[in-house]
Length: 204
Image 1 (spheres, rainbow, N blue to C red):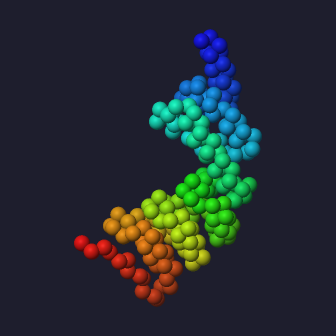
Image 2 (cartoon, helix red, strand yellow; image 1 turned 45 degrees about the vertical axis):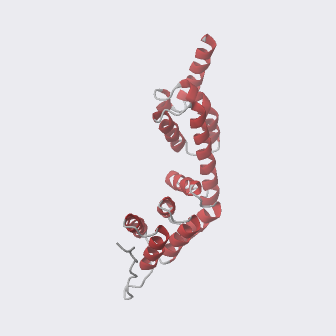
Image 3 (spheres, rainbow, N blue to C red; image 1 turned 90 degrees about the horizontal axis):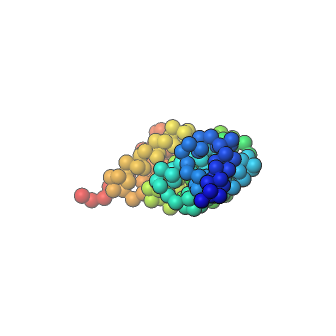
């Protein structure tokens, strides 16, 4: 018992110098389980903030240490892949958006294409919208095509947010997610003088 307490205190002391926000809120067994991942991420230049948030989320949910450690390792891997696709100068938000997109089915190649379509601008919103479309039921390949098509049409971040909200409303109203995403994307790419497509509604 004494040995365990000494080891736990050692882990806490080692992490507290680097992750003070975790020290007071995370049990020692959890700190021990995630220490190697946090140290590795820090050494590789990955943002540790999102990883610490994942730890705190697991503690809030009262998950066991190994489950929390697995989730943190997975996020670290996704952040690494996102950085490979988005570049070393990607912001934390971009990397988190990229990691989220990878988690729901986009590939590193998809991230590269979205980044290219943004022409050097922040691709975070585009990736967040693609992720949201997938969680609403749009297949990942369709979500990628939809986002790329509206970006090619010159859509702004505000347009992308409108697309996200419009699809959510349509899905809530009973329109199939894929239909809603495709029609809303065409509407964004429609010239001002052309009629906006009407989304078919299911019969009452």
